[in-house]
Every structure is written in structure tokens, then in C-alpha cells.
Image (cartoon, rainbow, N blue to C red; front, side):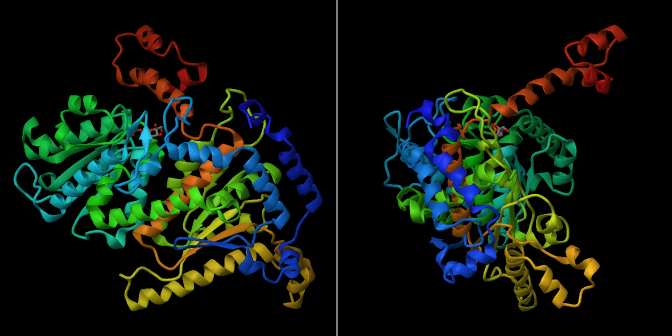
Length: 550
Ligand code: F6P
């Protein structure tokens, strides 16, 4: 299908067929769907790697799924997928290839960008990272005064923070517990202060993570960290080499900052920030968990990459999850999507997905430069499940909004927990299973009455049900399973961007705020000799902002 036709997505026969089908289905009840098909609970499931996916509690029939797959075929999702894997420049507004999948390609794979195989470079950086990580972990790499490194502070923001910070939390039970690993992102100096105030500078390594090495928050924090370090050590610039390393694509800026480019770990413009934590951006994580576990995580990513690349549409999990999102966003007017992990270790997982999904698909202009007139990416939100149950689940159960949700859980607790704490896992999982059941099937007025509830409370205690959920279940949380989960969401986001005909790999929407912040800053930091001079400095601002700055 050519770009012109794709941009009239909502006039295609496939879209119209889905709209008609939605009308015909009406208020479909999950109770009815399960009653009509006793095999639904096992039939509407898929397996990819270690992930068991149950999509039976969705407001869909075989026909819905067939029509959604037809939409995917009409919008050539698999064609774009193949172009991505081949290294074509599918990020058209930045004229870049999109090759995070090459970051986990095996050593002998060939993936070409502009005629050059990028896989050897990927493995050269991985090897250099592994060597460095081992030196830090073993104590062979020391600080300026000769002390062993005990603290690692990653300074970065967005994709240069969220990925490694999330993965560090997820894999905490696999980390070297003698190392303190912290992540600083906010330009609010309080973030750096709290991360460093109890550390011995002589034992601290700063990992400055910035693809561009121009991001104001990161460079400001890195500069302050350098001042703190040199002040604490009472040392000159020569101390920087042992305490600062850089993760970047911009060697010039790294060297301008004063970091030896021998201590720089590179990546490439074909790795988007939000797709980068399995590149050099994962160095702090690799130091924490060790190179072997980092590679296990990459294997997990690769497993799902291969599945996405080769599984037929009927059993392709990222395709399915992407299309279910299209179904709710475009045919049920759902505005948001909740991701609810039942694992404390996944506490930052949804925050990570917010960037992955919302920075990728929060677009309203199509790949052809035309405004789209259909809904694109949803608001993604959520926190670990049991905490959410006592906060916002009320709205999901009995509010007026349709909120599709992913429930992520694990059959076993992490190995490190002692017996008493392991037993709590059953309670956690009892909640996990109970919630999706309640959301799907609710409680009818008759069931409420049968419990002896007085008539005036029956409506209040009735649960309508039919709140759609996907259950993603794995036996245990391992580095590989984390890689599988992240790749699953990466490709789900890809599928949706392909259907909506948007460029999921640029992020022009974050630029304007950055430019305006630069314009406001002098008005806040300069000392003015006269009121007129002060007024002049805010002259370019709108009336409201001028008053606020004053
Ligand atoms: O928020 C915009 C953004 O460009 C993200 O996409 C990126 O992850 C983040 O800024 C950080 O950028 P950098 O790694 O270049 O510092």
C-alpha cells in the first residue's frame, strides 16, 4: 500500500470492516464469550520464549482478530518490520536506520547500514564494556587515590537513564551487593546531592550517559559531579580519568568535557535513546550484574526479535498485543493503557515503558507529513499491582473509563528470598489472578443479592466486569526474561506505529520546551542593574510567563 492510501487509514476497507464489526458486536460480555467457548481460557493463549500470554480476557472474537490482522496486512506492518531488520532508514524524519535489534545480534550475524556490517562494532563495544565491568567488579580498576570503586553513579536522562535504572531494579537480586549503584537524572540539584552525600568520592565512579553529550540536564549534573569529586579529593583535573567514563555517540563533546575518549563506550545514531539500554548505555547495569548476565539479557531480547521476525501473524505476540491496543484505542475510544506488574522488582518498569511508548507513538503527523485523523499512542501508566489495588483500581473496576491493562507476574519468587518471604509470593499471586478475574467477570446484581446485601447497596456493590486484560506470566524473573519483556514491548510499539503510519523513532515534540528553557534561564540567573534590563531579558516571553518569572 502506498503512503497516500495509508494516510487515509480510517477510510480503508479493513478499517471500515473493523468499525462495522465493532458496531455489530455491541456490548460484548466476557461471561458470554467464555460460556460460548469453554476452550477460550487455554485457546486464547500464546507462548514466546519464557512468556506465557493469555489474551482470553479481551473483548474480541476470532473474527475481531482476523479483521485486525487484515488491517496489519493492509498497512504492511511486516514489510516495515523487515525493512527495520534490514537496516533501512525507516526513521525518515531523521534519515536514520532503526537497528536496536542489531545490539543483540549474534557475533556472526550480518546487518548492514549504508553497506557496512555493524555487528562487529556492536561486539567490539560489548567486549570493551565487559572488560571494563570486570575490572571494576574485581577491584582492578581503582580511583585516583588507589581505592577500590564501591559506588557507581550513572548520570543521564530519558533513554540514558530510564532503561539502565529500570533494569538495575528488576535485576537487583542478581547484582553485586557490595556495590552501590545510583542513577541521577533530574536537573534539580537535589537529585545529585542525595545520590552523592553519603559516598566517599575516592570510591566513586561516575558514568556519564548521553547519546548526544549535549543534553543540558546531563551535562549540568556531570559538571557538578566533577566539581564535587575534585573538591572532595582536593585534586586537580588529572583525577577525572579514573572517576569518569562516558557512554555516547559524540567523541568530540566527550573529550571537550575532559573525559579521555579511551574511557568512552560508543554507540550509533541508529540506536534511539529509548531503545538504547542494551547498548553501551547499559554499562552501569553491566557493572552491577556482570557481563555474563548482561549477555543472558541480550539473549532474551534476541529470542523475541527472532519470534517477531519469523512467527506467522496468527501466533506473533508483539503483533497481537499491538493490534489489541489498536482495537481499544481506535474502536473503543480507550485513552490509556495500564501496565501493572506483580513484582516489586518491576517497580520502574512502567515508567520505562512510558518513554518507550509515549515518546515513540505520541505523534499526530503521519509519515507523509499529513495530520492523522485517528487516535495514536495511549497514555501509559501504572505501578506495581498490589499497591495500585489500594489506590486507583477502584476506577478501573467501577469508573466510567475503559482501561485495558497488562498484568505481569511470575510463578516463583526470586531465588534470594528466604522461606518466610517466599511464602508471601502466594499471596501476591493470589491477588494477581483474582484481579484479572474480577475485572473480566465482575459480580452481577443477583450474585450481590445472594450475599444478603441490602437492596439499596446492590448497585454500589455490583461489578460490571468486561474490563480487558492481558496476562503475561513467566516462571521466574531472570535477565533473559527481562530482555524478552522489553523486546516484546519494543515490537508492540513498533506494530502500532506502523498501523498508525507514524514515525515511531523521532521525538521532535520534546524540542520546543528545551529551546524555551534556554530562553528563560538568563532571566532567572542574571543580576540586572535596572528594572528595564530585567524586563528586557524576559521580553520574548508571553504575558503569563513574564509574570511568573517576575
Ligand atoms: O527526551 C528527549 C531525548 O532525546 C530522549 O529521546 C533521550 O533518551 C534523552 O533525550 C536523552 O538524550 P541524550 O542521551 O542525548 O542525553
